Image 1: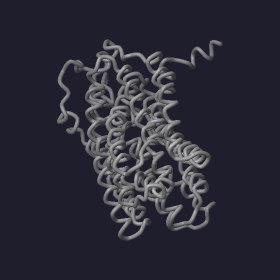
Image 2 (image 1 turned 90 degrees about the horizontal axis):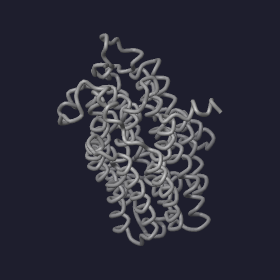
Image 3 (image 1 turned 180 degrees about the vertical axis):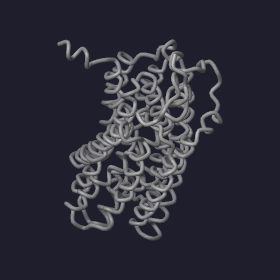
Image 4 (image 1 turned 90 degrees about the vertical axis):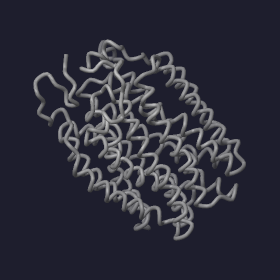
Length: 418
């Protein structure tokens, strides 16, 4: 009994709740990609429209992400805001099932981006405050990468396609509101607003001082993270948006077979998503990022260059280790590169710009390229972006607490210990 009490600390409760919260964000976000072969046949949509649906969500996400990060550093009741946002994106996901035209779907994607964007920087900034220093890399990687992979890349293709096959794609969307309702109630009941006194104890700068974008961007790792995350998102979203349709329409796989192929990537994503940030606590963030970036290139090419399904699934599993660089550049490195006073804004800026380029422009352009040159084109663009991720990762400044020599009394991010 004592063992359970020691394990079930508030930090672990928070990690568990945010694991499911972030997971369902990506479950709902990616569900449309796996259902698009059915939706396109029903509504008569083309590849350009597929790209626009991904771009619309990313556009509003890119605006609401930084804004949500800023608000999360200022708002008094973080848990109330979080619970409302979770409920809101669940309702919007349900409304997708009512759509009968591309225009309605597009508007719903825009709205979903508005309500989902603030969730990631808010959960990550709360974790940055509440996590112990030795657990920060694991907590951020586990709640961001592993949950994203488990729910968005394993459960979403298998569960959402199974529901749509058993009923229809409309019903599959209707059912997504159930976990959102449950999570909203759990957040209100369990999550605590960070203690202001604890927050002040972590920083030399008081939280009442104005948070400025220029104070965040003056750190080299922040703008490098923005570039790396933008390119990583280009690779990931081109793969996730166009990969399922490529497998069905170009490779001739059934919807069910496609869902299991994509799930093999998700399985690796779930494992490597937290394993690489955790290993980086010992090896350093930079070496782990470089290895992860190298494997990221393999991910989209595995679909194009192989016809053997077992080999394709093995290569996707290995390539999924590229997910490590996504979580590292999005949250771990930014949080450790600037004072935690700016953690919400640092993560929000990285996500916002990354969504603008990798999430908005990327699928929109790739959709047009797919219509003109073939559905395989976005996957080659994704591989090229992976090469650039590798090159920029070489310039990261190490931030892992175990690898950075610190002046006495100072944290890795420059804050003074008190």
